[in-house]
Every structure is written in structure tokens, then in C-alpha cells.
Image (cartoon, rainbow, N blue to C red; front, side, top):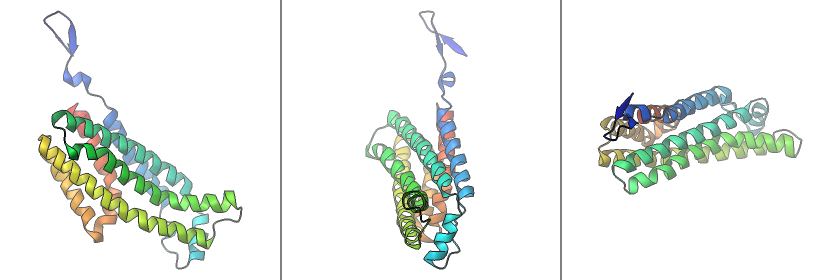
Amino acid sequence: MTTTTSSGVSAPRASDRRSPLPALAGVGALLAFAAAAVVFGDPMGGAATPAEAASALAGADVTLAAVLVGLYALLAIAVAGRLAVHLAHQRDGAAVRLLPLLGAGHVLLMTVATAAPAAAVAVGTLTFGDGVTPTGAEFALLVMNLAHPMAAWVGLGFLVAVAVAAWTARASRVLVGVSAVFALGLALPPVGWAVTYLMAFWFAGVGIWLWRRG
């Protein structure tokens, strides 16, 4: 629908200018991450020794999982950037300017945690041709156990920045509340690792919220 200006020119209403791209990016990020979780399946979870981990890793489709998480990261970064632009239009500040940096840091660390096993497979099979070695599997586990907690802490900072920016801009109490709940979950060690996987739902919800807000 359109409205007519004083000059007789038809101008689109705000509802017509709403772009579905944030919603598509958010939902796409959720689907990509869900697919990666199904494909990855924690192949080294039951391994008791580095040799067992290497054997399990050799038969897992970790490369596809790494690609899917990379896609998740790109789409999630797009949502975080669009959120920063939306909040900056209402009230700019330090918290708003930190959103793209912290959001990108969170999802990229998650990507590193998932890409580490794929790197071990690539080095063992493509570079040396000997398959995945116990040393390679052990190094992949080390990187995963470093990157995943770091992703949780950076994600905590990201969500706090979102809550502060949204509260300052009086953008949405729901956005403030949901972000605060997710931040609290990331701050609790017993459940923080699980909340990092649930962040895909946060990005999907925020993408849809941005689309509805225009």
C-alpha cells in the first residue's frame, strides 16, 4: 500500500519498506547450525584415548559440519550488524558499537571449535596422506576445549551489550529480557556450553523481530 504526499507522489508506507532479509538471515542461521549439529554429532565424545578419537574422527563428516557452521557465522554476523544499525538509529552509544565486534567474535569462535576436527582430518589425509593421527585428534580436542568456553564468554559480553543498548534505546523490553536470560545462561558454567548451541534460536528470533520492526 502507498500514501500520497502533498506533491501528488505516492510514497510507500513503512510496512512496505520492511525487508525480509534479517528474518531470512536469522532463520537461515538457525537451520545451518541445526544441520551442522546433526552432521557433526560429537564423533569423539566416547573416545577414551587419542587413538580412539583419531579413529572416530576419520569416519565422521566433520568437513560438512565446519562449512555449515561457517555459514551460520556469516548469517549470524549479518543479523548482529543489522541489529546494531537498528539500535543506532534510536540511540547510538558504546554498547551499540560493540555489537558487531562481539557478535562476530562469538560465532567465529564457535566456528573455530567446529573447524578444528575438520582441520585435523584435512591435514592428516590431504597433506600427509596418513589419515588422522592421535596427535592431530588430541590437538583438535585442545582447540575445541579452548574455543568453546571463549565463545561462551564473548557471547555473554555480546548479550550484555545488546541488553544495555536495547534498554538505553527503549527498543524492546522483550529483547532486553530474552538477551538477559541468555546472558545469565552463558554465565553459568554447568549450562553455559548448552546455551552456546541455543544462541542460534536467539539470532533467528532477533532476525524476525528486526523484520517486523522494519
